[in-house]
Image 1 (cartoon, rainbow, N blue to C red):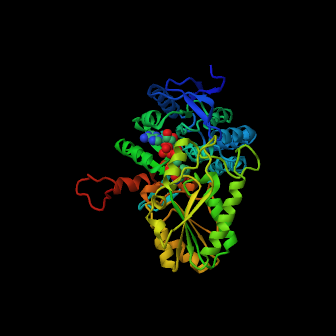
Image 2 (image 1 turned 30 degrees about the horizontal axis):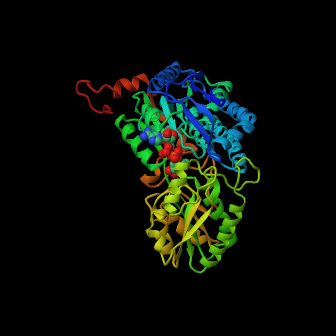
Image 3 (image 1 turned 90 degrees about the vertical axis):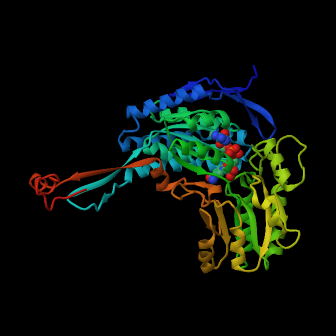
Length: 496
Ligand code: NAD
């Protein structure tokens, strides 16, 4: 007996013991294990897929009236709002993220359920201009069993971003949270059941990517995989999904450029850099990590940014303290990764803390030749480089395999339009950073950053397939004349 809380799988509408290796869940602020979590073996995956498939075929959710589905999503938002204190506390414990951040992030999830509920209530079905006396309209129908795989950095946010559109569309979902942070996702099971979701439509299967993840994405009944994670995982999963001719959405890595022009408000830009770079201890896919600054304002910006970083560093501490500015990194492995890229070892105390770190070029653009410029550190480490012209700024911003988020700081509107058009990323923010809304697409523009996008109408469509229904409304007399292709001596009959 360990004396820790133990969490089971959630399959077929109830807690179910897992047959995989038990996962020890650590508190990254102390390095101590505080919970055990069952993991799903390949046979547990098989059972869950069968439950999901049967639930889909029953039609209890997949063919339910859209208003019923919308009501369940709205109810899920209501129940989630009642569970917030418990969910926030657990999210802080397993991720090590400062409670200030989680108090802001977790309540925002209600909006995803409500947005997709509203979409179901207002969606219009197109009637197409198909030639002939034909009434041709499109239905959106769900795909079937879908798999969602999430990372450690925003466990609940990313699960709900994926769940809400998939549920709205009527799919049966198998969610595999990160093995580092499996707990809060499990609590969504009973919550959705209480909201009215039929059993088997939503299951949660914690486990390692190489075991549980591989079994899930390889299953031939799975019609879509939606993953958020690193580029290597995205590529490995994509190979399997492609072989099964299933659909694929992948939200992968980033190395976001943040360009500060000489016409920017420097104080606002420094605040924006600090938020974009150091929130979640720098462990976000859109973290502003390549700070590209006009030479005329570089010295002032660097001085202010270093002062800001020192202020944040002074307030680093226990994530559950309401005034802590920043928590630790997720694991000792992640800490080592950051230390390797920066080239200095800071560890020593308990927990995986790393201070905000700003690294400038030793000379000219020398920083752009480092691994730190090219690879995700996934920690609070940023690099600074100067430029003299718009063209140079764009070239530096686009000098990356990644293409997820980017930001521009300038008060010159024309410059903001011109430059944002030239930056090759899926999201460009101007005078802000890391804004996320259920209506606003979130996805990469290069393969290293992923395939497809989350949020908005597109995410809902990506969880459906179109069904084109064509009704001939010509009179029987007209059809007899025009539609008898094999009539002897036929002329003027229609084909296709
Ligand atoms: P990771 O790639 O290590 O793991 C992500 C998830 O994939 C986990 O659940 C893991 O178990 C699973 N997994 C890994 N290999 C797998 C495989 N071969 N088959 C099936 N499942 C597999 O990522 P992480 O360290 O948890 O998260 C950090 C990464 O996620 C960063 O690269 C970050 O940029 C990215 N991320 C992207 C976005 C986005 O929206 N684009 C958002 C957050 C994080």
